[in-house]
Image (cartoon, rainbow, N blue to C red):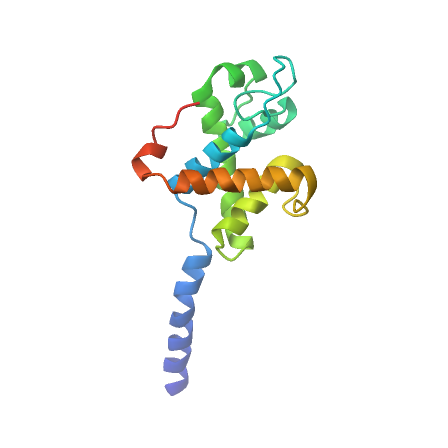
Length: 160
């Protein structure tokens, strides 16, 4: 009987840590990261640069993301000409990636943001400490922190 009670106490002691490890990111964190990526997007000053929307997404990337998020493909022009659609797809992908990185980074918010910003730029979660990619990741994190410092009600009003 004592062994059963001790086992239950140990098991119950793990429940809060398991719940915390699987805690999804908030809508606010997702929208803040989406906005940080938009603000950090390279400004090419070229209309036909092969990148689409305020987030500067490649067509081949858009194809898989729209299938994942919308269960259908959207064209680059649909994505380019519909900021709400673009934000919806980018938000969906950010939720997926942020949840993965929060788990991988033991719920360390800034480490998760760095990992996702690196992935956004390179396709890898690590290796963006120096050079152009390091500067980009830092820019995203800076924008993220600036957006996080604003009142919550303003983030839901952000438009492309």
